[in-house]
Image (cartoon, rainbow, N blue to C red):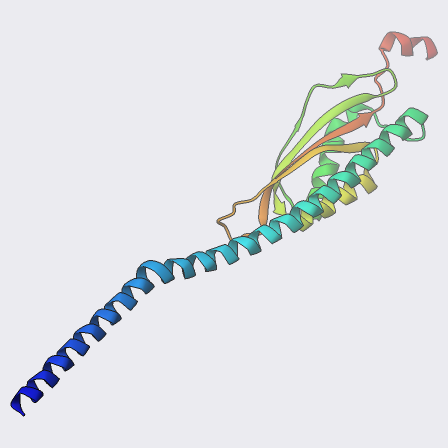
Length: 195
């Protein structure tokens, strides 16, 4: 009888030890196997959502880019046909002020404007303009649309939006590279004949 009781205690210890080992193995499997997989799954889902947002934004930007390329092509056609009235490049400061005012209307913060060397052509002069600043994606898109409405003599050659992926802010740094088609400056000697 005493021997039977000892074997039950030994069996209990054996079962307790086995249960403890099984619990330890289960805990280790969770910590080193399942938990990293669950964390990876959560991170993957977040990445998938972020990629979907980026894909949507890219699609919208591509649509906007096509619209602006079409607008630029139209402007070039109007220039060639002579139906667009151009201002002289000497109104450069006035034009920059108007573009800045338009950007402010759409809540864009303008950090800088830069014009590059004037390019002379027979029927028009080209004034490259670069606008940089900070603003939201929607505001940038609205600004670009209104630019084509208010300034049909200005085409957008390239635009770039750069955000900070780690930031919760929806604002981005933007760069718009535009070309303003200006009336050609006529040499004074040529003008003197007609005065």
